Image (cartoon, rainbow, N blue to C red; front, top):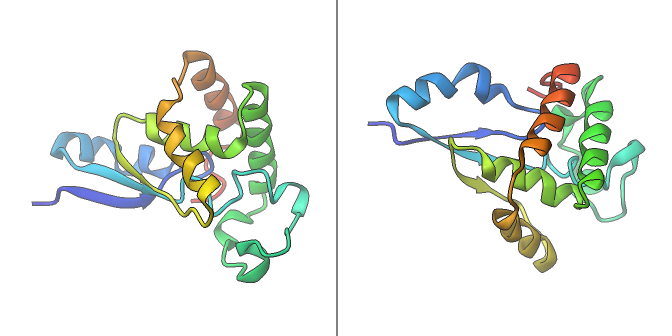
Length: 147
């Protein structure tokens, strides 16, 4: 029996909600969400095309999935929204993923202790209705730019 599914899931890739959530709910299959930060694009460090020295994007640039025509606009909107709620974009993005009822665990990719601490602290964020409405408003405009 299938117990869990491992798929990318984040602000810019919510395909699970459209393609798999219903059957997973019915069959009691949980989601192990990977790439909650969209390979770093939801941290703000790549905003406006930046490629910080030593970053994964600068060293390996395997993030083509997150470099689609509408991706940059969506990422800027979500990263800006995080700041309006007084959070760093990475904390906001991780909190969104861990707040989903169908997510059993979020698979993070921390490379430093502060990144790990931030990812773990996202479980303590109380996801509010205002946050959800704001995220949904962006999603209505940009959809899933990075499926």
